[in-house]
Image 1 (tube, rainbow over the protein chains, first blue to last red):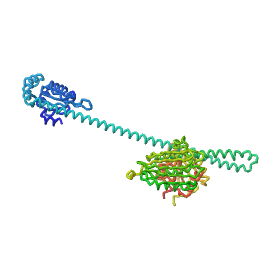
Image 2 (cartoon, one colour; image 1 turned 45 degrees about the vertical axis):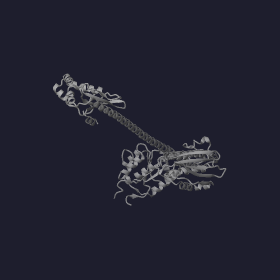
Image 3 (cartoon, rainbow over the protein chains, first blue to last red; image 1 turned 180 degrees about the vertical axis):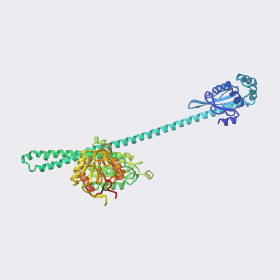
Image 4 (cartoon, each protein chain N blue to C red; image 1 turned 120 degrees about the vertical axis):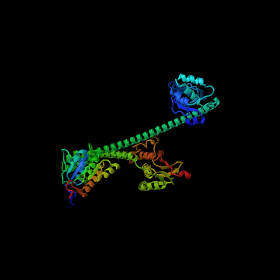
Length: 428
Length: 156
């Protein structure tokens, strides 16, 4: 750009540091400046100082003044990036009637240059009217300002890109951290449940061995005196068997909890296959596999026409199997059970509802039911208290959600929202 | 059938199990399932490796005797999977039937042991009845399987 500008306007041009030291090679320099003045020590220092002063720039317009070295006309504009002055763009080395042979001869003596060579080179310097040079200087100023603003935009863009890259790197780091934490948690659950199961094998196994020993003891005592048997009867027939029953029931309960924990830790690992799912077919399958329990409980089951959704069939089957089995589990024995499955399509999701007329959930328990190992009625129902916890976790992976509405004494409604089938919006 | 012995009483059952209680239960239930073979107990992975590879001062396996190995996974020093790896990497010992008996039914672990070439995988159940039936199955398995002898006896 510097070269082209110099060629087009017939002036010399150079870009320097703010202190005047050259950055670019000079374009179109006259012999006087290039080969004579700048080759002397005094002359070069004067040139740099002059370039620093003239190139300092202002926002109003170009600086135009005689060079503080050879005295030829020079003009300059500053180039700044983001408010910081980074370079001077200088043009000039033209003369008009203000520069005279006498002046240049005096300067030659001042910088110890050969006087006759200086004069010869002086007459090679292009002559230009003051008005013409001012026009060129104005063009230079406009260009330099344009360059500054382009450079500023580039810097802004570079900063923006750097910020983006930093944010992306941070995101990747957080994701990696999260994956590591998850893996660690799964490992802890795995190791804990394995190591905790190990003593249980002994507790249960040796309780059973004690049971066998007890039977042997009873046989051995068959021939003993009646009073011995009478004295030992409470121990052999009551205390010891009762102790063993409690020990074994607790071991079994603990095993159920540990198995549940393992199941929970594994539920986050299953591979998902997302597809547009015919929910009518899926619910029919769920009902088929629980048909026996439904008939046994004498429940009336109503299933409405259900909208499709885009999700994983295996996981969703587990969700609805669980909800239906919960509905069966918490029916009110005082009235015939009714379970209703309905669904509606919303803009981006399909919302399904499993409704029962069972015992319901008191408001205080509503947010607890999704907690791990929480059970509403441990004494009167089976299960490990993990069903809803696992459902919630699965729905988290499927980008769905679950919530519940309930009236104690008249029933509960569990809502499941899943991403709508692709193309659903097109149909609507 | 040269080199192979049917499951006779001379087949020695090796139990590598760091939990003395588990080892005791395994022995009692093998007996209850009618298996009266000699049982040797090893309390960690290193002990069983020393026995199989005839290292160290302890017991070493005998040429011409047929063995089966019941192997726990989580053991101190050398764990069961490492033992399985080393046994299956040895050209002679690889013929030794190895049955993993462990507390985890983690599918990844089961798959890994099968990939390494274990003969069977039994999860130690808490429920005693299941445990007995698992041991019975094991007894059945031991009675049916053809146990190769290690060292010399295999080759013609």
